[in-house]
Image (cartoon, rainbow, N blue to C red; front, side, top):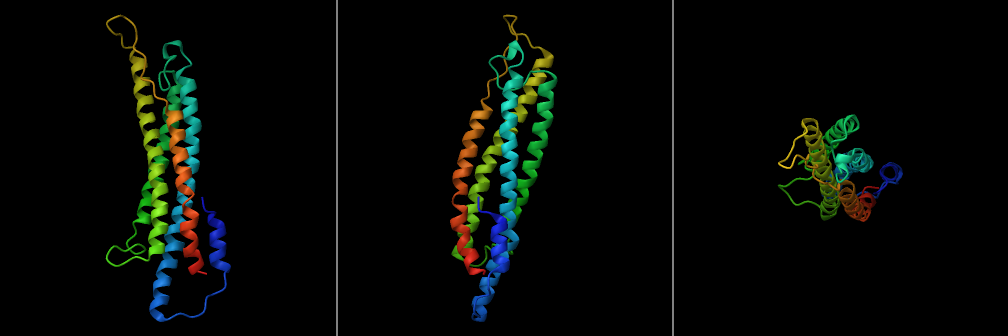
Length: 210
């Protein structure tokens, strides 16, 4: 994704442009304020989400290993592996909570009516930059939903394992197979593709805020 610190440095050290008419100055000032206060802050949050989702990828791989640690779970990718799986439940819940909080903050930043008003026309460059960031956030939310689903499934399978349910044949039914690691990687790839559109959408704003 666009290097936030580099953008901030460009905004702070670039020479001031020649004076513009008052109306144009106000319009550009609003756009630059939205860039600095909202969009760059959102980028920092999106990068943090990338790191959290990366941790989720590692944890999803651990889930599979822990679930397959016992013979009864040989065909499973989540839950039912005793203490190690219970620890996975805790780690997933922590990760899910951090991602949920971050997603909520970024949504609020990008929905800020002071920066992105709905009652008057928005500068097309500002709208394009915001749309690019929202596209990344939506892809990250897909990854978040996968992790949330994995957390629920893992916890349910752990509960079923502790209760040791017996079917009519006298054989414990295996927990449902969830290939969370594979599916999550697809979501990560989709996020990476959407992030390629951020820099070309943001740079025109930077150029006008020098």
